Image (cartoon, rainbow, N blue to C red; front, side, top):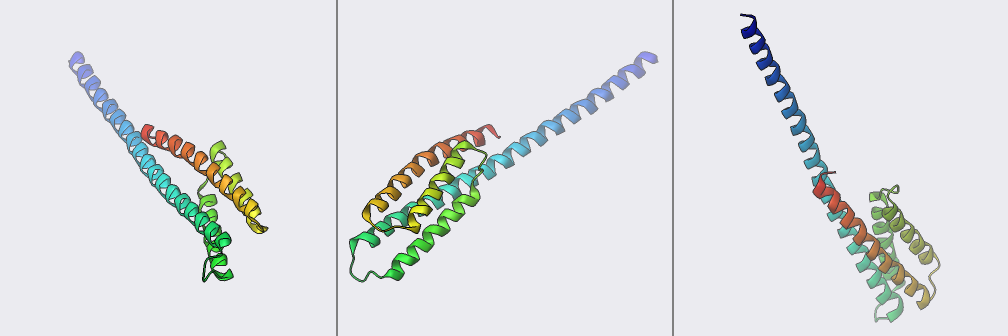
Length: 153
């Protein structure tokens, strides 16, 4: 009788421990899946904003220095306004404790400072150079974040 009771007790204990472990592991997997999903969305959104930013810089370069027919100061102002909006969106998405994201933020600050006093072609070339650096840093960030998403971190 005692052996039967002990066997039943051990069986019940095993069932409860197994259920607890299964629930715990499922919770961890669910959390990892959610984090991975949001990280992938973050990567996609940041990539889209950076692509838009780069497009705006190209458009500004054409307008600012091509002397295109029909170009107005308002056109340049509107493009700079869009550029600042893109830069602000990027800045708000970054985790400044991450060294690469902090580097991206620093590049954006440098560009903003140049835009405040842009006068000539050399300054526009500096913006293009910084934008190219943004490309490089962005690729590093995207790869690191993608790897984290794959690992569920």
